[in-house]
Length: 384
Image (tube, rainbow, N blue to C red; front, side, top):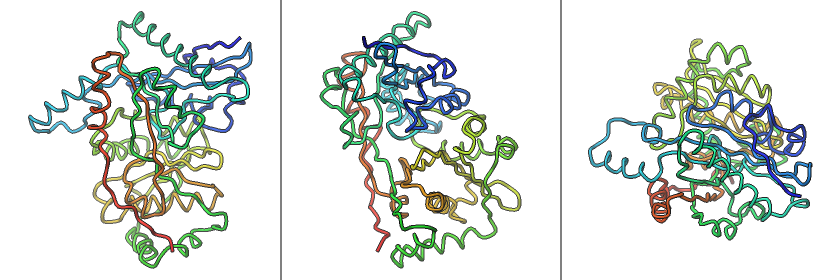
């Protein structure tokens, strides 16, 4: 018999959970505990285990997101016309949302099942039933209505989880989102010099210029004690970048990076950029098997442009990936042109979503496309 169970804490997950999802750190209990302890205020986590008799054969990560105007649009100084537009958008998107996947990270890190033990249709049906149970529970216990259901971040060529016909039967809209920027590391790259040797002269000179621009800034990996000592500063630098985004669905709390370093240990890396012992920037990484996942970063505005901090971070992430024998680097979304100039390529992604109000569900796809417009950018070709 195939059944499902809903869990409300990573500490209550069955013992067999981590063994099933050993391929993806974002599904493992120590990552989920780190996220629970450092979750944005508007995100609550649920976990679904799918069982064949008493054997765990599938899992799902579900996030309840309370999305409101102040979370979506960070800038408060807007024109009257823009404010009207924002309020109109928020009427469709705001409220309680159930996300199947991880809103805080790019990629499909919410679903996994054993294909040999349960069919994709059986697994999906059970996850949809669990979503309905969670929706009813939120209504009964808190009087809140779930407005939107989202299955996020499927690669177009994913034949296991990206099943348009299955989702369309449930009246979910298929929507294209910004691509995931990826960089594959050739096996013969052993150090950063192998990378620069593969670049054309134009981009090799660009790499050299960016390094010179750093000047007296030094890069230091922060251990647990250093992350704790710089906790407030890391958060301030993160906010400096996050608050400049046009649209956001959450704000990380101050303890987020400390929680991740505490629970993930050496699988979570934080590198700080210091000028005269003052932290002026940082980036973070999550080590996910042979895949290096770039995570949140931050910098102050004063040194970002003059010292090319962001570009140097992209190069340093790549150097870490090469020197530590990763197969590829996930640079995630945003800043696609500059990531392309480093060597990353765009891999198209899709999400599926449904509004629980049938009328608003008809408006959902065009509204979301307004919020997530196709960005025109020029792909770079830095390699010979």
